[in-house]
Amino acid sequence: MIHESKKALCFVWDNFDIIDSCLKFANTLRLLGVETIFITREDSLKSLFISNNFIHFSLYNLMKEHSIAVKKWFVDNEFESYESIVYKDINVWDDLYFEKKCLKRKYRTPLETSYKQEMIVKAMLCIEAFDNLIKKYIPQYCFVWNGLVYPPKGLRSLSIKNNIPTFSLERGLLPGYLVVDPKGINYGGSLGGESWLIFSKHISVPDFKEIKLYIEKFRREKKSVVTQKDYISKRSIYKILDIPKNKKIIFLPNQIDSDTNIIYYSPFFKTNVDAIDAIIKSLANISDAILVIKTHPEDIIKDMELYLKLLKNKGRIVSSINLHSLIEASHAVIVRNSTVGLEALLYDKPVICLGYSAYSGKGFTIDVTDSNTLHNVLVDILKEKKPEIPNKNEFYRFLSLLLNNYHFKLNFTAEDEKRNRLFLKNLLSLKDKEE
Image (cartoon, rainbow, N blue to C red; front, side):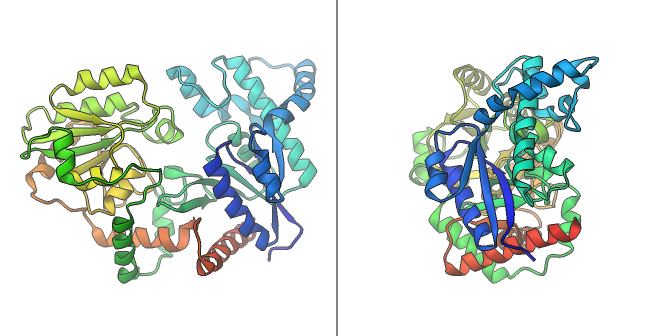
């Protein structure tokens, strides 16, 4: 049973859309008697929280306030190396898994440093700030956006150490939804890997009528997890990109190489360049296919030059064409672990996954871990006149779970609000029982 006195800490990024989603979520929590205290890195969007009557803290301000405590720790404690530092029962260097990978690959991180020592000190300052908030508010729940990277990972690790039920938040796997998962996000969440086997045992037979209606609605509205340009036809794509009519499109949406989803869950194809190179080599002796790449907004000029060098006459690069248009025009879709793969499945397109995702490894995607297998898979798919996804009933089952048991709906009606409340009430109550 949830009581009025319960509190939750919630870390979110300084992003209007993310904050808007979390405010809707927190308002539903409020109806259940859980009051949310928000933390963002900065205070530039503080007014959004204040106008909704939520307490808000800037982490950067808190880190400055508690810097003396961290300095004192270094004076009072001996340690063999920075890698051996344990602060508030957290092995800081081990906890910085994502940041270490970024340091090695020369990527920027939210901690905004490229030096090991400074990275560790900043992580300790995050932990100190979060620890003080935990002691001040004694929260019954903790929510973090993503939770695989510092600063939010510091709050997640500290909350788990303090036996506080902790949930990760992320953009929904489907448009218009929010993920709230006690295990983590993406492949590391409740649906990834072997977790699916446990989770799926409790899923009832899906209502195929409901699933088909959702798919029809999805294709009709053409919404995506991220904002898109206007829809254009398959014929227009072939004309704009100057693709011969006899060519079949293999579509690859780029991802951010420094994203947590790639760092953690794409071990075989670590960069966009790795994926493009493997696909182009696989298509080398295939004359009836062409690779179409949609760039990510954060693709840099240096990468673009590499893409063009690899593609030559075997591909095209686009930046602003609607995702739904590209999916519909494609013969097959290749992703590392992007949510575009899930959207492609909703169009009944075969999806080749080069990395691990929440929806891969369940029989309705084609999972590839090496270039040789990729070549064979593409050869087989291109032989088919109109390939479809395998194990469609299993996909419907998975989709039923996403719609009814896994997501918090953001743009809700009165009926959806009831479902959201029941979803969160059950989720938090189940967590209470486990504790």
